[in-house]
Image (cartoon, rainbow over all chains, first blue to last red; front, top):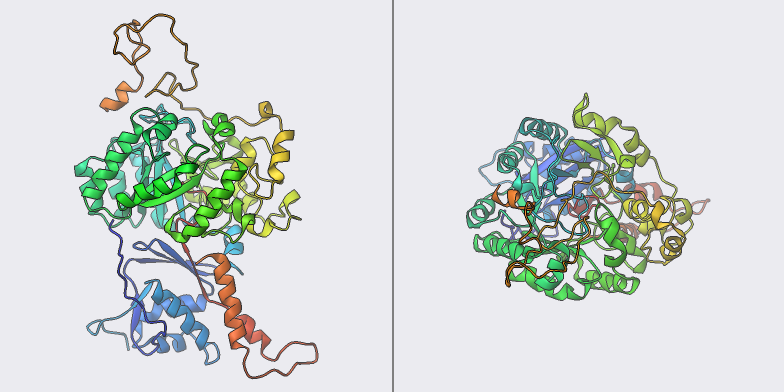
Length: 107
Length: 405
Length: 55
C-alpha cells in the first residue's frame, strides 16, 4: 500500500452548492447512534453522531448539491451550519469528495 | 455523547481486531505476549479461517491485524490475506520479517489493502537481539530494505518500549525515516513470556516521563496504538481514543479460534468464547457474558476519585492482572505514582500465570527460553562452533524444522 | 485531532455562536441554549491506530 501523500487540499469553506459523494475507498457502517466511516487509504475513522448526518452523507451522490441532500434529510435552516461544518470536516479528511461533471446525480 | 463514552459501551461489531494466526514462530522473543514458538495441533484450518473472514465481512469489521507467532510461516498465509482483502476486510500483518523477500515486498507494495508492520526492539543489533534473538535485527532490517526498494512507503516499524531501548528513540525514528516507514512505539505489558521479564524490562518511572515528552513532541508522526493512555496524567493526552478497547471496540481471535478480550490478556479470565461455537464469532462478540461485563459503565473503583481518572481511565487491565494487582485499582505504571506502592504490596508468586504456553522447549537463536541454560564445563567440539550443543549426540535445534518450512 | 482538541473545538464553536442575544432568562440561561447544545460537532475523527488492544 502506498500512502496518498497528496489529497484534494480541501478549501476550509465547504461549498454546499456543489455535487458531492462518499469516496470510493470509504466504508460506511451504520450504528444505532449514527455511523462509523473508515477510509482504507488514510486509515482514519470518522464517527457520525446522529442518523441525520448519516442520511445526508449516504444520499450525497443522489443529489445535485450537498444543500439539497441536507434539506431532503430534514435539516432545517437553523441546523444547517452544523451540518455544513460536519461535511467540511469529512471533506478535509477525504471521506467525501466533489463529484466530477461526468458523474450524474439523481433527480 | 462523546466518542469515548460511546465506545466504552461497546459497538455492534469491532472496528478492527487482532487475529493471531498461529502459535508457531521462528523466534523466541523474551517478552512474547502470546508465549509463541510451537504450533498448536488444534489451530484453525484454512476453511475455518475463511469462515471467520466471511463473518468479519458480514459484520463490517474494517480491518484485521494479523499476527501470531509469526503468521507468514503458515502455508496458507497469502491465500488468507488475499481472501480477506477480496472480502472488504483490510489487513495489516505483524512480522519479524523472515519471509519478506524482494518478490514478496513487490507484491505487498502493489496492494492497496495490505499494510505491513515489522517488529524490532532496538536501533542496534546489540539492544534488539538481546530481546528477540541472534540474527533477528538482520532479518528485520533486510525486510525493511526490501520493502523500501519495492516502493512500499509508510509500512510500520513497531517497537515495544523497554528499559534498554528508551534511550534509542531518536535512532529508531531515524531508522524508520531511512526506510520511509512510520515508527510505532507500543507499551510492554507483563503478558505471555513478558510476565517473567517485565520486572527487568519495563521502563523506569523517569524513563516513562522521558517517553511521554518525546511522544508529545512528535504528535501523530509516531503511532502508539493508543497504548500509552496511562501516561495521560503527565499532561495533554496523546493522540488516540485514550480508552481500553478490550471487548468494546477490539478483541483477539487466537490460533485455535478462542476469542479473548485483548491480545495482552490471553488467560481464561478474559476468554469470551470460541469461533467454533454455534453462532461463531458474531455470537461471541454480541452475546458473551465477559464482553457484556466489560461494556457495563465502569466506576473506576479506587481510581475513581483520582483527579486524573478521566484521562487515564485506570490504565491497562492486562498490566494490572498479570502483576497481581486488583483490576479496580491503579495501573502498575500509574503516572501519578499510585501503582508503585500497590506493586510493593503485591505478592509476585500469587500473580496469575499467562496460559496457554506455546514456547519453544529448547534454545532458539541464542534465547535461553523457559529451559534453564547449563553452562558447559567442557570446551566446544570445534574452536569456532557457537552452538553449546555441538558434539552432543541426539539433540538438534528445534527451530531447524521451521526454518526449512 | 485528539479527543481533547475535539472537545476544545466544540467549546470554541459554541463560544463563537454566542453572538447577538445576551438577555438572560429568569433561570440564568441564555435564550437559545438548547440550540447551542444541539450545535455540537456532528463528526469526530481518530486514526485507526488510535485504539488500544490491537498490537
